Amino acid sequence: MVRFENVWLKYRHEGEASLASSPDVIRDMSFDIPEGGFRWLTGPSGAGKTSLLKLMYLAEHPSRGKIELLGTNAARVSRREAAMLRRRIGVVYQDFRLLPHLSAYDNVALPMRLARKAEGQVRADVTELLRWVGLSGKLDRRPYELSGGEQQRIAIARAVVGRPKLLLADEPTGNLDEEQAERLMLLITGLNGMGTTVVVATHNLALVERHPAPRLNLLSGRLVDDG
Amino acid sequence: MMARRVDHLGLRSAMAERLTPILVGAMSFLAVLAIAGALAASSLAGRWSQDTGTVLTVQVPDPDAPAPAGGTTRLRAVLDLLNVAPDVSAVRALSGAEVNALLRPWLGADAGQLALPVPAVISAVLSGGGEPDSLRAALDAAAPGTLAETGARWAARVAALTGSLQASALSVLVIVACVASAVISVATHAGLAQRRETIAIIHGLGALDSDIAGRFAVRATLLAAAGAIIGTGCALPVLFWLAALAAPFAGVLPGQNAMQLPFALWVALPAVAVAAAVIGWVTSQVTVRGWLRRMV
Image (cartoon, rainbow over all chains, first blue to last red; front, side, top):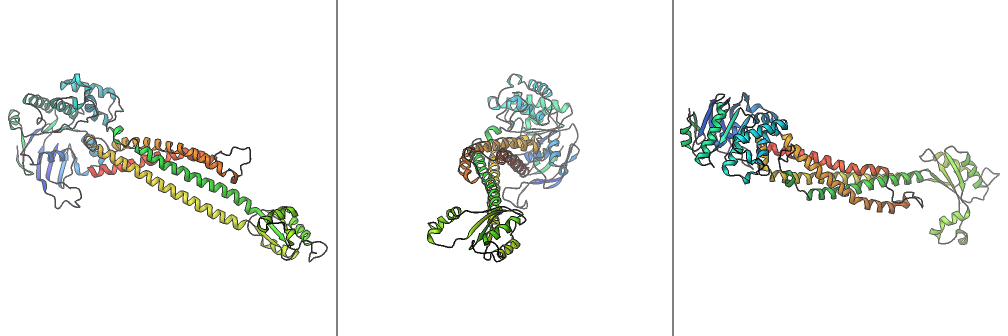
């Protein structure tokens, strides 16, 4: 499902001709997550959690190593194939990344519309999902009209509306109180129970303890614990 | 809320709504004038070349003297020769009054009053083109000193001038197209910069490059076409004014509509809007796709 083999990552900064002078943010990382698996992604700030997730949703290319996602070698896909692969990956960002000029409904509908699904199916799926996350009464609201927790649930709904095979979440509970965080985890574990592979990056070790699962523990860009 | 064609990228507020059509409109205004200039030059040159290139003017000095072959005057001998010459028609000797009218601007008075020896002048039409060298030799034999001139040299110069004007107009069109493309590119870059975060999100959700580029291209195409229509509309009064000014040179007779524009120009006017739209579409597609490749 997700396989990293000796993956390294450097960021190219603007104006730099080569990567040689950039520091490694991911170092020689290898792991394997089976289909339907759940992994916590833990580690201190700057350990490389977000960078690792970016590699998983193809927002970055590794400077070295091989990444296999959903049975596809990520290095050998065309731009079109990469876009198709992204449609099978749901991402929940720490800062939600909702489109401020779109309503809650349209934000959630976006992945389906990009995939050119029929509007009838979009309406049915989006309405159902918004009901599932408890926001059926706020379809027309813009993100800035919603609380942090509500925005996070919109982001979750958008991430899963395309029935992704892989769900990635970057600090999904970072902006939520404990009750909302717990409710969110129930949503995510529910999806995992339905067969979606899930990777959740978090600082919240109490949350990890309440939902025991294998961990990818990072330190300074290296994987120090896998299991 | 549930409309399928929702503006995902928020482009209605991202791309310069006013500046782009105004700048493209200014470029279109110049393009229309350049096209009109090229067409007018071509039309006038064609008319002038046709007129000057086919006129044969023959000057016969001492026209009343006996011809070397005898039996008639030099003028009569030349007229007889021209009347039977192939490719020569409409042979007509100008009257004394007509010759005086031609000379008056240079002499300031009638040639007769100045006691100058004035040659007879014969006007004819020469078909077939080129210089009538063999005819010149025959005319000189019939009446020594006879000069035969055609407008071929002038026609060649007019053609060269027209070619230069058309090349200049083409250069103007190329420059205008490049500037319009640059304007669209800058507007698209501004829109991309303003919507960078949105595009990154949509890209991450699986949008194809063609999805994003297509939305910018549609917007840029509409703005460019609107600008071109405005620019062309602004150029129309100028074109009518220029047409009225050029009417005397274009063979427009009194009573005819002096502000009539040539058919080719009426075809070219909508073509400017189409060209602007194509430039808008292509430029924005190339700009957005290049930008996306640099982004990821």
